[in-house]
Image 1 (spheres, rainbow, N blue to C red):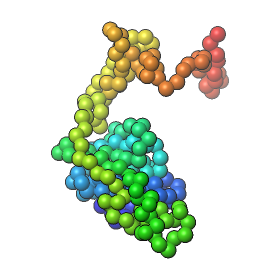
Image 2 (image 1 turned 90 degrees about the horizontal axis):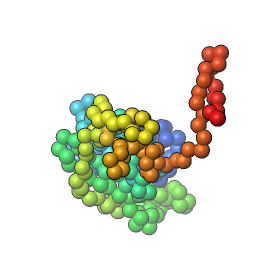
Image 3 (image 1 turned 90 degrees about the vertical axis):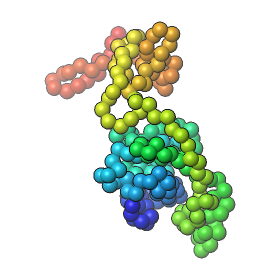
Image 4 (image 1 turned 45 degrees about the vertical axis):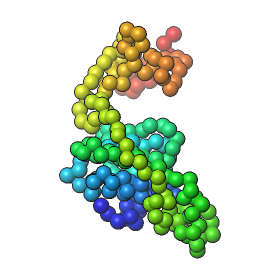
Length: 212
């Protein structure tokens, strides 16, 4: 794996700016890969052998994606919206898994590892670069249950919603009584339909025409 500064520079390029979250994410990913025996996640030898569960949709997650190469579209990154700055790294070959959590105590130590910095932002950026892993992170060895529908690769599971006929992939259907439902037709949906606007083709362009 590349050294920290190179990985951080590439992550910042992709993310768009340098912040404390970028530093935490890069270091978290480096530690996670090391703990589960992934020497270089971008090496072809380790392709599709690493899955990462992230627990927050903030800066550190972009850094973890940059360092590991894991992506939602490749099914190697999983998002669990717990609002915790944490990630779990899983070696699919060995099943070895570690959950790494960014500590709150690291804020209190940042100034000690960045004594020349006067702004809080720079104290955190430089301090998080320099402080040891034991202060920056809490680490747990964990067991992660990965089901067939969670694995990278082609779609293995299909179901059809009994209500709307929508195809649901990867075992994500919801069973209510004897009915098989998609998320939007169950009470697990994140949205509520107000109206429907199908598309129609006019002079080669798609336009919207409201159904009355």
